[in-house]
Length: 133
Ligand SMILES: [Zn+2]
Ligand SMILES: [Zn+2]
Figure (cartoon, rainbow, N blue to C red):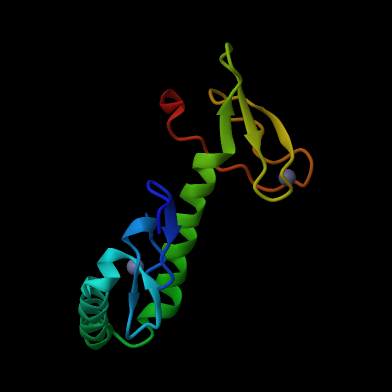
C-alpha cells in the first residue's frame, strides 16, 4: 500500500488507522490495523470479557435491563443536546434543530423557550451551558 497518510477502517476493531500500516493477518484472513496485527485488540477483548463476567456475578438479578436502558437513554440525550443548538452568527440568538422532525427554529436560551418543537411538539432538551457556544 502506497497511500501514505490515508486512513482506512480496520474491520476487526472498527478503528481508523493509517492505511499503510495494514497487514494481512493469518487468523483474521484479512488486512488489519497494526494494533490488531500485534494482537493487542484481542488481548483487550479478553480483558473486557473477563471484566464483564465479573460484573455479571456482582450484579443483582434484573440489574441490566432497566438501568442499562436508562444509562443509554440519558447518554443519547446528552449527545442530542450537543448537536441540537447552534448560535446564529453575530447575534445572541440560538437556533434549535428538532431531533425528531429536524425542523429548525429560534430558541431563547435565557427564557428557555419554546419548551416544545413548534412543528411536531417534541420536547426541547434544556440548553445547559449557553456560554459554551
Ligand atoms: Zn484493528
Ligand atoms: Zn419537531
